[in-house]
Amino acid sequence: MTEVKAKTRSEREAEIKDKCGWVIVVMAALLAINTYLGNGNSSRILNDTIEANNTWAFYQAKSIKGTLAEMALDDAMSRKDVYKVAALSKKIARYESDPATGEGKKELMEKARGLEADRAVAKQRSPWYTYAGSLLQIAIVLLTASILSVKNSLYRASIGVGAFALLLMSQAVWLWIPGV
Image 1 (cartoon, rainbow, N blue to C red):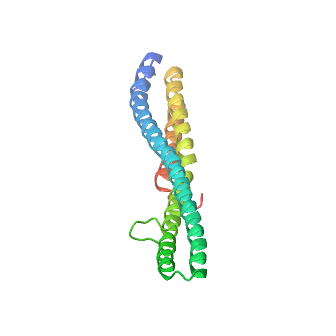
Image 2 (image 1 turned 135 degrees about the vertical axis):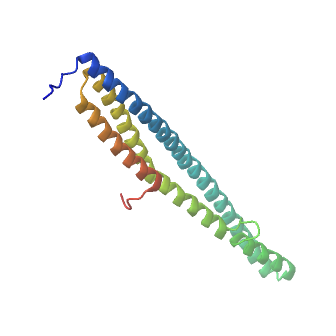
């Protein structure tokens, strides 16, 4: 029976450095991708908020114009101005709904609510990107510590933390666990 010779610290260190080096590169790339996606998600939240606010402001302006047109319509009806009544009735109807331009109150409300719904989905994704990024950073720190301490247990722990981070990142991208 041959005796297994114990490896020296420098041999173990070289072996773990080789393993950890590649894993650090992968984890750092995943961290960069996660950060890129998370920043894009944050931008989407901000852009959707601004666009929804602008759309609701436009809706409000249409409401004010509609109210003023209704007041003018009442006046024209009391004066029995048939032409003015017809023109104002068309204008009021266009303020309520204008599918041709998409600028009626009905269309503006649908657009604003759609933007708010998109923003809500982006807000659901946001914490998952944060959690995944934090865990990827921790995994990289554990890999570095495993190199310095020449401990395979830290290496294995970093792989586990990195795998969990990847799971959280997938939740951010696909929201595959509903209601979480």
